[in-house]
Length: 286
Ligand SMILES: [Zn+2]
Picture 1 (cartoon, rainbow, N blue to C red):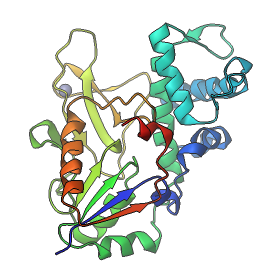
Picture 2: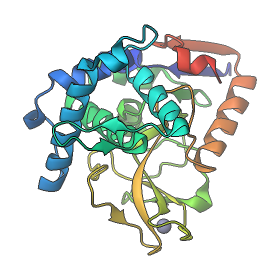
Picture 3: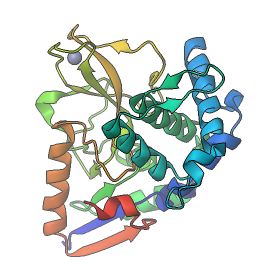
């Protein structure tokens, strides 16, 4: 059997409704908060605060006069947060006259992107996704740069299983009756909107660092002030995603195995298909 590896970029999710990376910030600003599925009143309050920040940010000459920075580009904005962090720069908060940390901006942007995906992606996927899943042969694998769960949904509908290739010992599948560690490999190099990671709640704590895989239709609160506490009692749960920026935050060792498996799959691929991937600037640094 000829081994095929499919590499999926944002374009592969466009038909299902996902916005392109270059359009994320513009999309966020034109989306009504009422159309997003906030999980609590607190999340809505935090969300409103971030949207106000984003609106003020894109209109601020301080950033836009720098010709190399497009404030509407999520990649540029994220890169700026890393530069800001290194140089101790903080961002002006809207209204209050106070400042917000680069880390806050980054976490909120990640959260907002996931909220946007959750609201934009169609609940019933176009037929082409099912056709794609049916066309896969045993041994074929998928490497995706997307956070959304369109591929998994199609495979689950068809075969009831797929393989995230996450490290077994550090992975808790919080999804009754579903096996996400066998079958067609779905290698999510940038994480996934249904993965949560345990990280220390306070400096110096020894969190378990496990990744929790959640049902595709039951995505938990990501970014509000109140994080879900992990069962280890030492950490809180946050989304496990790698932002589209030059500085890659790989989520520690959890994604290492996924990257290693992906490298192995690429090495033994006989045919390689690239779908909807534009090789953005941030990926060139890899
Ligand atoms: Zn934990």
